[in-house]
Amino acid sequence: MNETTSVKSPYEVRILRDIRRIIRAVSIHSKMLKSTQDITTPQLVTLLALCNDGPMSLKALAQAIDLSPSTVVGIIDRLEAKCMVQRSRDAGDRRQIQISITAQGFAFVEQSPNPLQTRLANELSKLPELEQATIALSLERLVQLFGADRLDASAILAIDAMETGVKNDNAKSHPSPPS
Image (tube, rainbow, N blue to C red; front, side, top):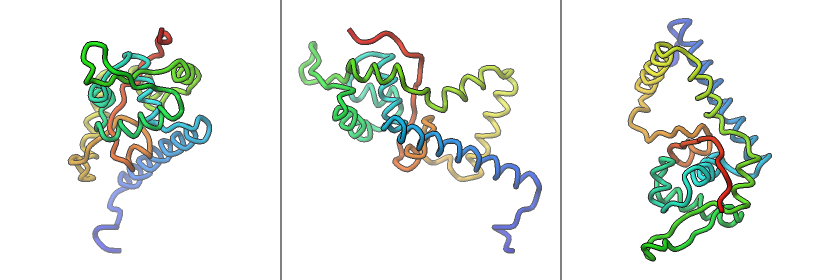
């Protein structure tokens, strides 16, 4: 075995196995969401942001969910085709387009499963702050070791997010439907 592929400590095996488990959990969740709900994680996160924060411009939406505006355009196109969001001119500035969730989109959010990261966030919040800091520092170090610290990152836990370079989500609880 050459130097780059040999395992030198029992910790390496444990770390690599656990990373693979995390990747697998994300993959299974993403596939389940797509097959059972016919929606991707970035689409669900977009709906959640619009549901929680109300109508917003494409630029504000992209910032709210930490995705590039060009990625959000594609997501909005697909959600609009499913009648879950709509585009409309801003009353104050007709040059601006506002994106809002429709009643159908809101109904979907109400019955949709929580994104995988919601469970993780809930479980992390139960841990003592020192343990949360230890986990954060360890993961940050792993990112450096992988050489991934230069990649755009996403808090969206989805395989499709990794493949398309999409970024973050701000999943929150579900508010009241649009009026």
